[in-house]
Image (tube, rainbow, N blue to C red; front, side, top):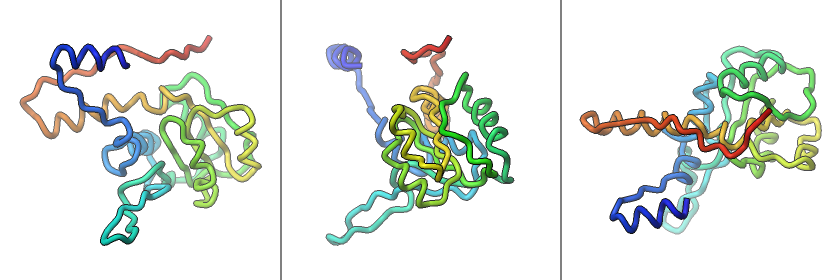
Length: 189
């Protein structure tokens, strides 16, 4: 990435870096796209970020990390895992032991979202979908929730479609293309 930035600067090309912004917004963000792909309803930000108004913290319901919502109808854990695999186009899912319960409430965080596990548990989520979980971190579920690690790239792969939609709405006369290049450095056999 650094090489790209340096080359762009040397060539006088403008860059617009929005990665963190897309991770922390309700509308048109990474987590909203995951929720959409899973058909979650009644979504809301999982961990609101306080903004300051007149020196006092004022949470904005549309700014924060992660998202939580409900499936239209409860489903079994194995059916939900299959839906997750199919809808997120992942070849495999690492997860904690299943609890033998129906899935209704689902929390998501694209990329490395392990820091949100306590929030997902406190919010009563049945599943927490994110990426980059290490072996010992899976123990933190402690039977209270199912953690599903779908992979970092896989959790953010639809961002290109999200950006295409945003640009298409704002600039209808602008040439738009989506790359088909897969930059995921992780491969599965």
